[in-house]
Image (tube, rainbow, N blue to C red; front, side, top):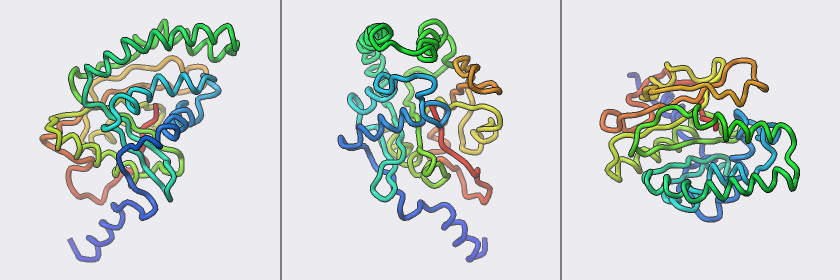
Amino acid sequence: MEEHSLETFQQACALPVALRARFFQKQDREAIRRICADTGFLGHPIDPVFEDRELFADYLTRYYTDWEPESTLVCERDGQVVGYLTGCRKPIRRFLFHLLYNPYLFFRAFYRWWAWPYRSSTRRYLRWVLCKGWREVPYAPRGVPHFHINLLPQARNVASTRALIDKFLAYLVASGEKSVYGQVVTWGDRRSEKLFLRYGFRVLDRRELTKYRAYVKSPVFLCTVWKDLAKNPRLYGSCSHRRPTTAGAQP
């Protein structure tokens, strides 16, 4: 590779000076909850689908920020949190958390159903959670660390996504983990299997999320993607000029 080409490639792969990935701190908790709600509907605010932002953030982020904060990272831009990666190395602890906490969330939702009262879109979402949601979760390997990443629009780029994931993968490898999986949403032409293969992930399973049928014309799928860290401990396995132009998984 010629010297000028190598320099150009290194500049393209580098994280912008204004962006940095770091591990979670207690003061990041509210920012993570806000971003979770602001990106909960296919990268947009969850409000049209589910109005109870507090309950939504509790279900999706409380374990990671309160029970296993050491496995969570944030992405900062000019000192502001613009994205996060929630990770888990302790699946049994997470299972116990949801076993104990989910009934509490259920009774909160039941009370607010009548006390607020919830509008029709929120009630439809809750009916999906109770009747269909558990059947539409794709297969995930047991006992394997996992992660989920959410980014605000201004941070949805290759550099910030790579910085978060590479830092998390390095953390897993240093902790002796051998593999990792994530669950990401795909629809239309967003994120094909070829993109996951380029990142070194393999698609294990995918299921359609019917909760979005009233809002999106094309089917929306939740995919489980898995990566062998022994073979490839970074987001990119080798240097290549061919990079995806967009990145960032949404819930």
